[in-house]
Image (cartoon, rainbow, N blue to C red):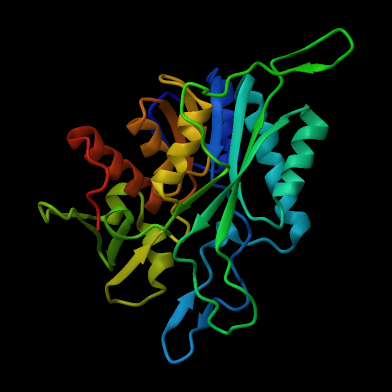
Length: 307
C-alpha cells in the first residue's frame, strides 16, 4: 500500500513501516508511544478501596507473555523504523523506566545511535497507589537518540548538530498533568453506533460501525452487552509533552513518522507546529477518532475542543 504525508493509517506497525519503506518515505524523525506491556492479562481490573474497579487490560496489542517477547517485538519495529529514518535524524520514543535502557543499548550497539536526551515527564497528578504498597509512579520517560549522519574511513560515526539551539534553554524534564478535560479523546460507544461530542457546539456525530469497518472492534468492546459504554484511550499523552520534543528536535516542514499513534496526540502536535506527519495505529476505533480530531483541527485550528 502506498503511504503519503499527512495521513493516518490503520495497520499493524510492522506492515505499516514496510509500506513506508516501499513508498520511498524518508523521515526526519521517528516519534512514537509504543506498547510497553503494562496490561495485566490475568487480573484485568484492580479494585480501589471503597470505590470502583479500574480497567488494567488496555487491549491485546499491549499483552506480552514475558520481557523476552516484549523486547523481540520492540527490536523488530525499531529495525524497520531505522530503515526509513534519514541519516542524522532523531529517534524519539516514550517507554517505561524498566525497559528504556534496553532500547538505548540496542540502538547504540547495533546502529551506533547517540543518546541526545532522556526526558522525564513528571506528572503533577500521578495515579494513586490504591493498596499503599509503594510510592506513586509519578513520571514517564522519553528517550531521544540520533542516527549517525555519516562514518569516516575507520568506521567512526559523525553526528550533525541538528538540535534547535534557536529555542530558549529547557531542562530535561517537564511538569504537566495526566491528560484530562477538553484535550482528552473519548467516545461513547453504543451497540449500533459511535458517538462523539464537541464541547462548544455540542454537535453529535453518530456512525454505523459497519460502514467504517469497525464492527468487529465494536463486538470486542461489548462482549454481548447491550448498553452504552464510555471509553477513553488508556495511554493518551499530553500535547504539551509531545510538542517539547517536536520543537527542539525538528524544524518546520520536517516529516515525522508515528507507527503507534493511538488517539493522535503526536500527529496533532506535528500539525500544530507545522511539521508533516505520517501516523498509524492497529486499532480502528482510535485511528477513526484521531482522524476526526485532525479533521476538526484543520477546519477550526483549535485542538482543545473535545470532551
